[in-house]
Length: 103
Image: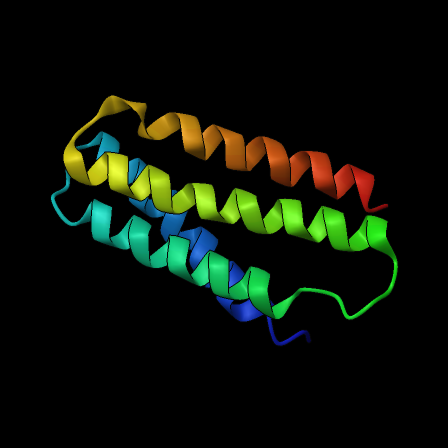
């Protein structure tokens, strides 16, 4: 098993749970979402490839920037703005896009 899988899985479970609980106005959902965002960034840093292939490095860089959008989403949740969904959608789009491009 890869060393980045556990923070990846736990992080994205926390992100999904935090987003769903935020819809139902649970007061700690922002912190759950933020913890998941930090774990997602850690997992992206651990999974960066050690290769000379520029295309693969660029795609993993895009995944890392998508994970950074989660911090923006957590901040927008924290200040109470409804636009927190947009960085989350951007991250989702980048993840799906890169998963097809890496094949």
